[in-house]
Image (tube, rainbow, N blue to C red):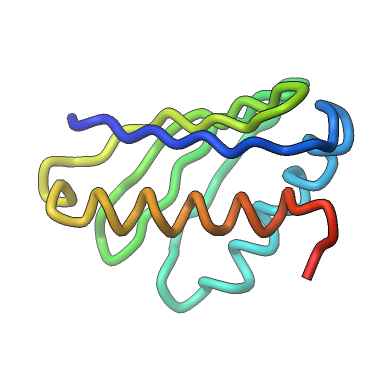
Length: 104
């Protein structure tokens, strides 16, 4: 399966960034409820193991929150390879918004 990766820098510190991102999963469920099904995630300290299905495509990965950045490493099925750039861009933008110093 093809991999995708993204990294978002933040000035929040690990604890604050993790707190924000723990509520992020619920926001994603609500915001994208018409496009995303079977969204699951399990936190272990500052690491989220997640999986979701969008338009029949299963995406899985790991979000790691560090002192000054959040990193996602995930797997896409070959069927989603053409959408890799869009998927990565969408995830990156959502993380940047959630980790912005002044939340919109």
